Image (cartoon, rainbow, N blue to C red; front, side, top):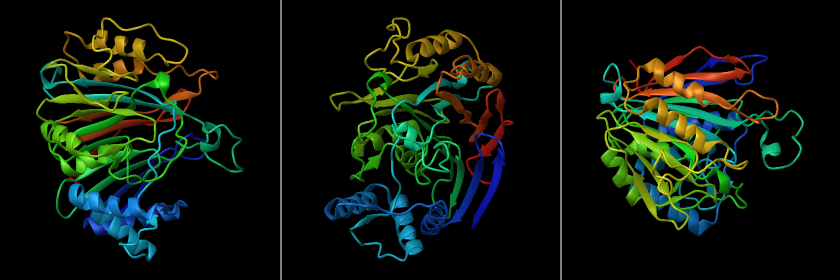
Length: 372
């Protein structure tokens, strides 16, 4: 079953947000996602046959939910699911320049005992053409102006709700029915560059990774193992990920410039993440100064840390901390916080306000990870 509703924004607003709810088998969910993507103008991406064949084998072994959805995509397109020339899932690209800030408040540091993560998703108000350095096409919308909230309730396995800027089979924010929350952030803002070549690779793409985790894992320990075992790729724009669960555990996953994988944990205290590699700057009290190229990543982390260290935070305190690190609504600043989300790992919900224009956000919308 498919249900599509408009939940925020409208004529004259920067964002128009839709909520897509899908139920049924993973095959049926994949078919419905593909039909929605085709309605928006998507078409499958050509792929090297030997790579595409290996991709299907990898998904079948390590991410069977996605593999079944790809079979549904093939049915929607009238294609043989075993064909090797076209990739039947999304284009996993986050152009350089997006910032983001996130703060995990563990249950023992929360006024009501609920573990929560708050995050700002900071991104351009530009079109894809402008982000890539050319003039916009006639009628081209800003690339982040039509986000989706997608709730999937499969017949078997974990339900989840995600927020995605563009890729219907990937996401930026996610929470599942077990209370596992995942969000992505640019990992090294100062060195990020747009990808030169984008083509599907074997393993999990950067925007697929949060959905991979909420499909396959129930807690932070399972997520660590899944990430260590997974083959990953990022098209040259490295991201890192904050992962938190309903049992009060949280960590940041990132890869160094040498490809080494890092799990960063701060024990029982709050965990702050912005847009620099934490394994290279582990002490929030001893961070470098910001430069023109760092988008305030160090100052934003210092602010979040100072607001959260040694105190008990209410849900409103968490929201106020996120507001304190939003980019300025200045015409000279190309970024805005396009949505601000609070994940409640105990209630298995995400609550979000969407950017409608300077000085205007939607009312707070609450989405459960599964139907109630």
